[in-house]
Image 1 (cartoon, rainbow, N blue to C red):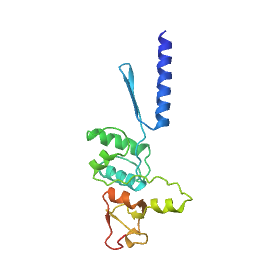
Image 2 (tube, rainbow, N blue to C red):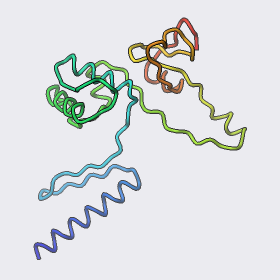
Image 3 (spheres, one colour):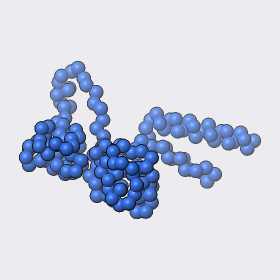
Length: 172
């Protein structure tokens, strides 16, 4: 009977987790006999933001390996230790509270847009693309002299919502 209960609970958790992954909604299930299970899609940040986090964590004494903009095992481990040391929610991922604690402006990954054949609809939804650097706090037009060392494409509305200001040289 005990084995049957355990099998049923495992099957139920598998079904619930599968449904949660399909719908994209977070699922939390708690029971005193079982550990807490949380499934959700985390917001991802661009490579420049992750690289800034890696550099900042390294400066603070947390080993992230080479700052390359890719969140690997060392970076995840360093983030978890930092979050634990500074009483943040320990997730091991780059999130808003981590960025705020490190005083970094994060830029979220830009979703791929689907092109449409209808030219009227395409012109209504077209977004201006601007560029940001690894170290700056301004957004730029393509070809600006401040983009000589690094250049990351971002939608104008995303740059403005992330707190970036317009470059005074190229005036995008």
